[in-house]
Length: 341
Ligand code: SF4
Ligand code: SF4
Image 1 (tube, rainbow, N blue to C red):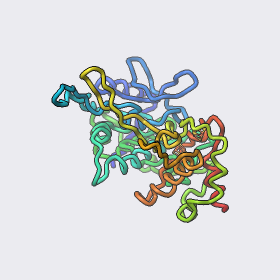
Image 2 (image 1 turned 180 degrees about the vertical axis):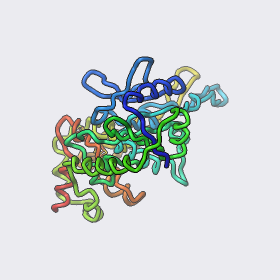
Image 3 (image 1 turned 90 degrees about the vertical axis):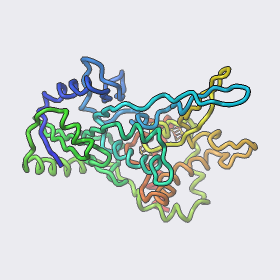
Image 4 (image 1 turned 30 degrees about the vertical axis):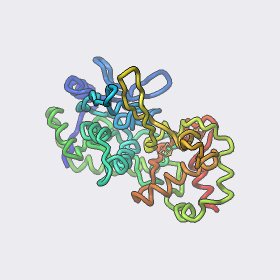
C-alpha cells in the first residue's frame, strides 16, 4: 500500500486541483449543520468536524432516482431513455463509520445473484477519501461495538489521518492509487508515521465512550420474536422515519410510476420500515399494523436478519438515530436492555 504525507497547508490546493477535473463532494458548514456538498470554486472542505447530519448513502442510493423513462401509445409502451450514466467523482472527508456502511450496502445492492446497476454504476465511479476520527467523537458514537473503529480503512479508497503538521495518506485500493497519480508529487511516509498512527489509533479508540453489547443479543433475538419486551420500546415513537432516513445502512425503498399524458417515468424513492404504508398490501391487509411490530422489525433487521444473511450487524454505530430522534428513543439502550433479559 502506498503511504504518503500531505502538508496540512497543501491539502486545499490539492483538492481544488482535483475539483477542476471531477466533482468533489465534501463536508461543508450549512447553518447549524455539516452537509456533503459539491465544492464550487473557492470553497474549502471542513475537516474538523465530528460527522455530517446526513449519511452519505445518497451518493449511491439517492433519495429519489429515475430508473427509466417511457412513452405510451395506444398499442405499446416504448422506453425513451434513462438519466445517463454516473460521472467519476470524489467523495471526500467520509468518516470511517460511514465508509464502512458502503461495504454493508454493497452486500445488499451488489450480490452475486442480485445486482443493482443504478447503485453499482455510481459506487464504481466514486473514489472514497475517508478522514480518520482523531478529533473527539460525539458522545453517541459507538462504532467499536459493531465491528468498526474510529481509524478503520474499511470502505475507503484513501484514508487520511491528521498527524499534526501533515496528513498521512494511505492509498488502499487501485482506485485510490489512481487518485495518487493525480495528486502530484507527495513525499513517502516512513516508519515513524506508522508508529504515530498506531498511537493515535489507540487513543481514538479510548475516546469512544459509548459501548453496546451489539453482537451478544443475536441468540435472544433468534428465540424471542414474541416477547413482552417488544411492547416497551415503541410507545413514544412518532413514526417520523428520521432514524431510518439518516441511517447510513437503512436501504428500504419504494418504486412508483409517474405518468403525465403519454410520458412516464419510473422512480425509486427511499421508504421506511417505520411507516404503516410501507407494508400495506393491495388487499388492505397489513402484516405490520402497529408501531410495536415496526420497531421490532427495525431492530431485528439490524441485529438478526442482516447477521443471518450477511454475517454482519447492519449498524455502524454512527449514533445519528440517537442524536436526531425527536423523542429520544435510543437504540443503544434498547440493545443494552435486551442483553439483560
Ligand atoms: S426517529 Fe424516533 S420517533 Fe421517529 S420513527 Fe425513529 S424512533 Fe420513531
Ligand atoms: S442504527 Fe443508528 S447508530 Fe446504527 S448505523 Fe443506523 S443511524 Fe447509525
